[in-house]
Amino acid sequence: MRYAAFIAAALMLIQPAHAEKAPEVDPRASLGVVQQWIYNYRAKPDYAHVPAAVRVLFHSQTFKEPENAGIYLGFIAGAISSNPAKAEQLIASFFPVRPEDEWVIVRAIAYSGLPDWRNVLRRVAPRMPGRRVMIDSYLAGKLPILTDIPLEEVKPGMMEKMRGAFTKNPFAKEERKLNTTLTFAGNQDLLDTLWGYYFATGSHAPIQRIVQMLPWSKSRDTIDKLTVGSMARYTLASYAIRDASLREYLRSELARQPAAVKAPLGEVVEAADTVQIATLRKDALAAVDELKTKGSDSRRDLSFWGQVGVGAVALGCVSAAALGQVAVGIPCVIGGSASQGLLSFWEKQQ
Image 1 (cartoon, rainbow, N blue to C red):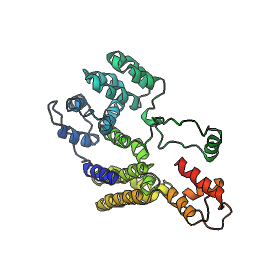
Image 2 (cartoon, rainbow, N blue to C red):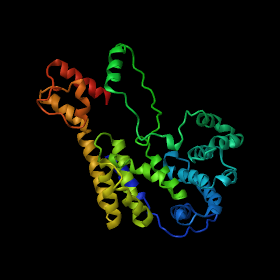
Image 3 (cartoon, one colour):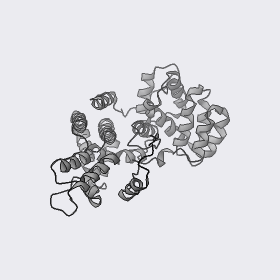
Image 4 (cartoon, helix red, strand yellow):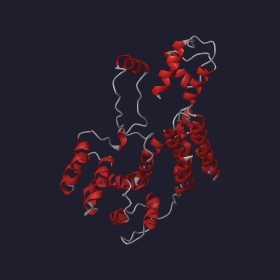
């Protein structure tokens, strides 16, 4: 229920974007005023007041919890990108910045997509000596920029898994390593970052990335993918209700997208057209509850074959099992103790 509660809270926090003139920002304004200004920004960009808005964000300690600051980080990155000729002037206007908030400037420059972002980062680096490690990591390519972050982590194939299983010392103590791989599937704040970038630029590039996550709203494989996919579907519909240009763009994409994307995208467009997004929220919560209760599709299918005594799935058919395509009688269903070993092996790889 923890994941269901998370989705419920996140869905309630989504605010629709209004296609109205962006009001000016007083540096002493409240965070709520700046939030509304950001949501309205792309209707009529107000570049001159971006520094004031960013100062309010810093003053309000918006970046104290990085995982909750994605939309603001994305907006700053998009604002930097929107006017390359004045990018360094804009960045300079953000200073002075508290040392604990300097990471925002570093990441916003890296995420901006400026053709010369590396040199821009090098020139501003002396003002943030405490972020030297982070700056060097971006410059060296150890940390990915926004456009290089993959949708999900590429998992090793079955042969690689088998090779590791037979070459690893079974008596060696296995050390648990921290997985620092950055993916959209495993980092929900990146979805917010894409929306912030869109609010600042009106570019369809981040929207395309969000659309690619829609098949996960039908996933029953992992909680992370289901959560991000459901949020992608819900936020697209929520913002498209008030944003006619976004709604028409999504409609135009229906004919170009593959079937896996087209189905949930059609739900987004219909929900936006009819202003019926409560259904999407309920569907997301129900899907999370089901996944938590029954487990992933791949685990359920494999456990079923083991329980009924038919045996587990041979290595060549594991991918078919994950898709729920295993049937009694096909050549890759085997029996005996070997099958139980394969079942155990596969479950340990999940």
